[in-house]
Amino acid sequence: MTFSTESYRIDGKVAVITGAGGRGNSIGRAYACGLAAAGASVIVADLNLEGAELVAREIVEAGGKAHAVQVDISDAASVARMAAASKAVFGGVDILINNAALMVEVPHGSTLGVTSEIWDKVMRVNLTGAFLCCQALVPLMRERGGGKIVNQVSAGAFPPATLYGISKLALWGLTTTLARELGKDKINVNAIAPGATMSDAGKALTPTDSPFVKAIEASVPLRFRGQPDELVGAMLLLCSPAGDWITGQVLNVDGGWVIRV
Ligand SMILES: NC(=O)c1ccc[n+]([C@@H]2O[C@H](COP(=O)([O-])OP(=O)(O)OC[C@H]3O[C@@H](n4cnc5c(N)ncnc54)[C@H](O)[C@@H]3O)[C@@H](O)[C@H]2O)c1
Image (cartoon, rainbow, N blue to C red; front, side, top):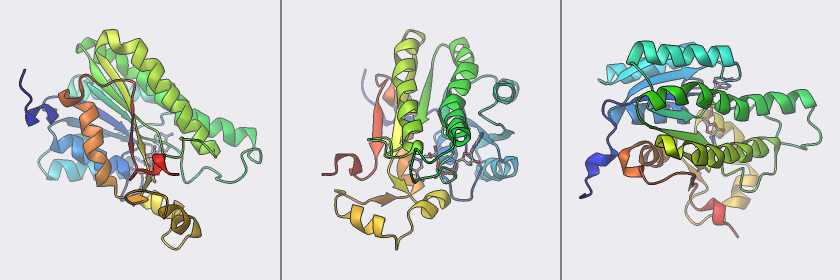
């Protein structure tokens, strides 16, 4: 086999991306647009239907294929409806990007200071939500002879220092576990760990004038903060035939933050 850059194309594939419609400039929006530009039909799923519809419309107006679906990933019945919609609208599913999560909403202070209700809610969305989406969509991938799953973890998981980081490290655990379980079905399961990304939500977490940003910038080889579009290439590698031999891996896209001294 001779390598061709065509192996980054995903024409004819159906991709489901969660959390792609919530806030204006989101990572999910960048991923959805990237998936469509690479040839996939995209199910743009979010709790926020209006936001999902905006992103789906943007894709269709640019000549791509997309359909918006409202989903609460923490609710199995809602996820089942998303799976059924994917099958009804585009005929099945080949790619799942588990991108939806609670992030800005999570208290970033003392972990022992959070209530068990908040703990359960964060784990329910950030971990169980991805699990439920895998459980609902893997059978559709099996019907089509294989698939790709990408879990959106975080640089904040390596190592975790907050409840949010704990939830993302647990999602990394789901990644390696399912990679082992689903290899026989030709389903690759990988993760992306973005660094501080300037989505609208990310900007709120790390404002330019924060002392935290200035302190950490000095220890990052490239840049501490990046743009949502700078994650899309990694995501397409893991979703396309170019990544067929990659499974159970985390791709850190963070300017080198993970190797900070
Ligand atoms: N921005 C960053 O710096 C950064 C860094 C590392 C990882 N991440 C991860 O990247 C992903 C996207 O982040 P973002 O910066 O675009 O933030 P965002 O808040 O814009 O995106 C999260 C999306 O998830 C949706 N969502 C929340 N709960 C949901 C539920 N129960 N069901 C369905 N959808 C739900 C929200 O509506 C929102 O659209 C998240 O997984 C986040 O943890 C972000």
